[in-house]
Image 1 (spheres, rainbow, N blue to C red):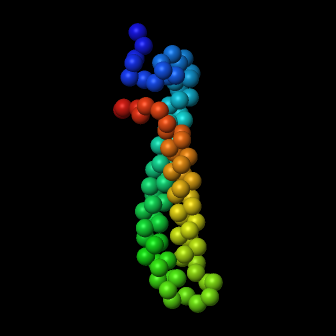
Image 2 (cartoon, rainbow, N blue to C red):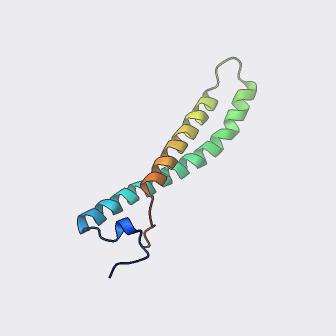
Image 3 (cartoon, rainbow, N blue to C red):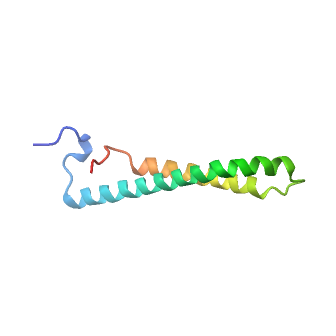
Length: 92
């Protein structure tokens, strides 16, 4: 009897397909963890970037550039993680 808690496309998977699905979701979870770590780093960088933008002359704002890079990577990893984790979450 099929498990009706699963989406219809996941009800009749072979064991190899289930393993591939678990690996994809695990990678997605890893990307979401990396995005969370970048969020913490971006929060700390935000403090330094504000001071850097306020007091550094000209175009020399390395902390602001690090902040923009960190936010970009955060968005990339978060989107990739959500795409890979789509579907019903696994309960361990």
